[in-house]
Image (cartoon, rainbow, N blue to C red):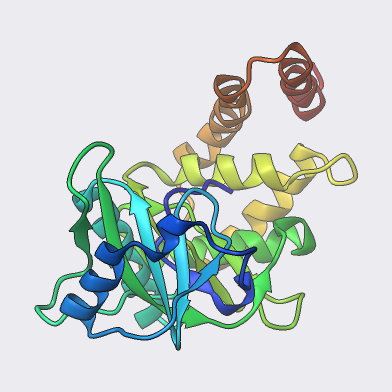
Length: 252
């Protein structure tokens, strides 16, 4: 499942190791006081590429992103939460903004305050393919006409999807792209890509319309998603794993 500089977080991320000095920069605290009236202790959380803290019942996130790009993800998370799925949606500033720029320069950084979401990370491999497909179809239906993002799923009971968080950088595109990504990453040796995809699409059609041209395009986007992994690695053994993944997925 794709992930970007996120715009939602969970209480289950948990405090990390002792925080380095940048996690208590006066500019972050000053911005929180000025724009959200958020005060008190900031507890650092583990959150990939972004700097994230727990602040009482909220999560504070400083992301490396353009403000327009990041705001689009915040808007998407708000739309999904209003439809009944917890997302760790944003808390508006005193002036009604979704987020604020911080420390102008390159790369750009934006600061947001989000609602905490209970639960822990849930691997997509722990969820039946039809359930994942139905869930993505529901998201696409909610976000029709809205750019799509690449968040992560959360669970309160360790089995069922209870929230989808980490909304951040977004893009617009066809539904086949998202389906290709989710199925390429959801399939395993025990549940090969073709069987996983067939079950996933059955679930998707239960919650959303799937035009024939989009269904036909899914294998192309699966190949694109797997092949793109080579853009992130250079070591020969890592590239060999990407080639092996492609061969297993498509019986090549």
